[in-house]
Amino acid sequence: MGRIIAICGKICCGKSYYSNKLKEKENAVILSCDELTSVLFNNNLGEKHDEMSKRICEYLLQKAVDIVNVNINVILDWGFWSKQDRQYIKDYFYSKNIDCEFHYINIDNKSWHRNIEERNQRVLEDKGGSDYYLDDGLMKKLLSKWEEPSKEEIDVWYTLER
Image (tube, rainbow, N blue to C red):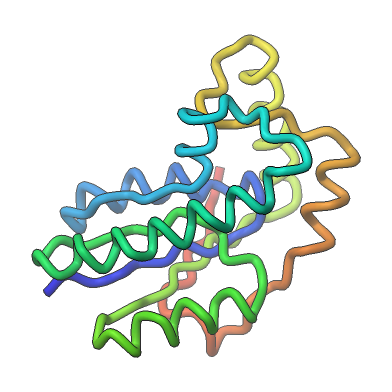
């Protein structure tokens, strides 16, 4: 049976970069809510974004179980911003007898701000892929939802260095 690798980290910390590196090493499939909202809705959900993201994640959880049950590892590139979200995922997979480990992407403030600037520039140049522009209002909203994990919640603590 495969296992779940849940990637935890705040916006623009390098989760997708890390996930893509890990994919090859772990022979895994990446499931990303951001990727689906981009492909299906071109990131134009407006006020419906949070609701639709929740529904997509619920669907992807079911797919993750299907994939793991055929002996393929799954990387959930979602962020898991709150302690409640992290506990829910642990409990969900535990109830299905599926191993789940959390990898946290730690990034220093200088590198993080550089990532945000580079991301926004790519979006402005229409080279952002599934990314969306992070303005001050959106950053404030997103950061208000972020809860730094404790060491006890995390199995692999990865520090991104640029």
